[in-house]
Length: 329
Ligand code: TYM
Image (cartoon, rainbow, N blue to C red; front, side, top):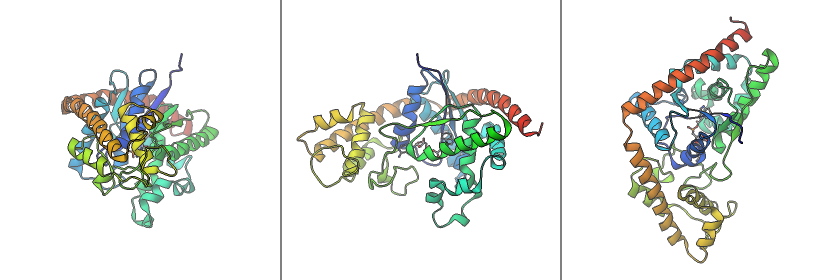
């Protein structure tokens, strides 16, 4: 028997979700909920660390809720909620800002350095502080496992450090969480530049496939995707990263093993491989979007309200312990 664990993860509504988000994160969640206590959030207060249009943000929060549901997250089994509707998240983030986190921790964060670039003084304080809110999200629920893509591992490591420091000072309040990343698909790469992560914020729409992309357009993006020199189909991430990325996408969305694909395409060229992959992507998106369309805004809102109630109940109890431990109650 597998041990039941508490799982927490989230996605920020800052762009159109891509097959990278699906393969690296969401597809793991649907598998995990069968035998664990799962909590999945739409982390809207993370999204506002960079400027958002309020109308679009409001729309995306509902669309991501529908994406969770279309991906098979079952609101009867798992809690699905919107971060900003549960104030304990920002309250704990403040406490952890003061007790457990150092400036030096945040200055080391790769994502901050990438996003802020050489404009560190001109970005919001929120962008800098973002990993502390993420630590609060995770620690509030006594989370044991955090299923994420590779790029979020460092943030989960920081949540561990913060939790350990806090516990050393105030007693065993927090469970120490660990990141769970897929062996393959933890870092789906851009279709136009395989040295970069596929990202919903990328300026070039050809670099990613959004879960809600027009299907014909998505097929074209696969056909246009860059490939490495060479002609045969072989899995070699170091030497042929573009092809390895396409094989990873094929395996994940087509439910096939990479070695099996390599065997099946022996003696065949890139052209045939890409044509088949375009069909696999089209089939996946078609099925996914059919499910998505069947969910109404009202359904999504009802799921979020039900989730908010459950999350509020858990976090209220936890916050009372935390407030008492630090001496504000
Ligand atoms: P976000 O919204 O950038 O991404 C959501 C999830 O998708 C994964 N992901 C990828 N996986 C594989 N390949 C890719 N190209 C790819 N792009 C994105 C991310 O690793 C992530 O798992 N800070 C988080 C959101 C967050 C969170 C949390 C996550 C806030 N609080 C608590 C877990 C627990 C973020 O910005 O993810």
